[in-house]
Image (cartoon, rainbow, N blue to C red; front, side, top):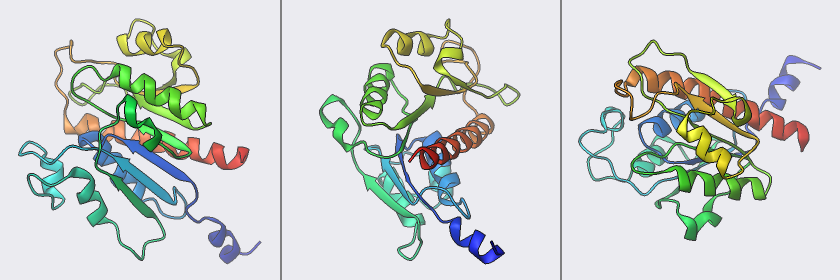
Length: 214
């Protein structure tokens, strides 16, 4: 096989859905749309939130206060790009789970008690055969280890892990520092950058596994 033939095989394929386009989700989305020679052909982003004054990374990338976060991502894409961006201006709840499609579903929602919604999303995605990934704490000042674990291998004392296990969630990837809102550490951009790197790598790995099994 020639170099050109190998290059032609490395085209975007598959569908990734990002549920939540906050400061972490936006970083993951930027990483995914910049993947070269591969990666997803379609990225769906689902989030009903608007940019606030505190959303510095959005404003650094041209977003304006009051604009939907998903609209900024759509502006950064281009119609001639082979990678398509689909945006949905809604927050996922029990009544609209059918909005979730995709070969890989990545969940990075924050604010309030998000665990019941996360469990519903994972169960829905698994029901049609998708692979799933979410966070298990992203607090940290910068030197924390970022781990990616199958839920069966994660710390059972972590309340996120415990809740999802209690909901009979299996075959699910968890990524993060393990540090939560109860811990003293804040959430720094350095940690979000590193969590995004790990989650993007895991998403691409899961997508590749889907291609192989398909």
